Image 1 (cartoon, rainbow, N blue to C red):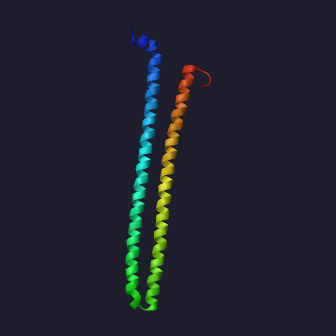
Image 2 (image 1 turned 135 degrees about the vertical axis):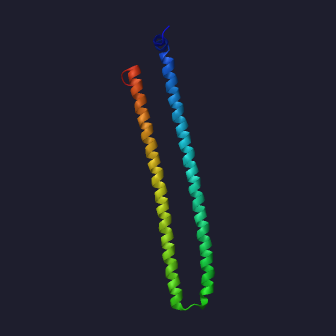
Image 3 (image 1 turned 30 degrees about the vertical axis):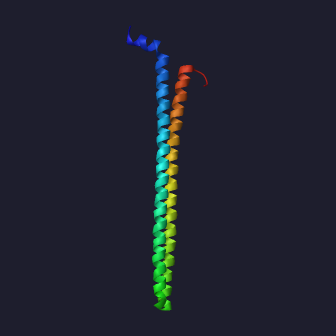
Length: 136
């Protein structure tokens, strides 16, 4: 028995084995992607909590400075208040930019995964069409 006859007699078994392997690989990739997204989400939440704690600590420090600043002149207090307002605006802008970057990165990753899945589906349909003929 030659290799060609063995392959031709067991073609369907070999084909289905390859299809099952491809399907299992796709499922494993989807599970892996989902786990990575979950880990990223948790890391983002932890960073956000750390940022909030840092901001609360700074607010507490500023509040203690304000109490100590009762002896300052009005123009000195005004200058300090302006700096505090500017710093708060910058902090909010930085946080908004960080959030936008994170969302855009997640969107890009999902788009790449979607493109890969669509390509795999197209290849699978093409293989089915070649094997079974006609529309599948």
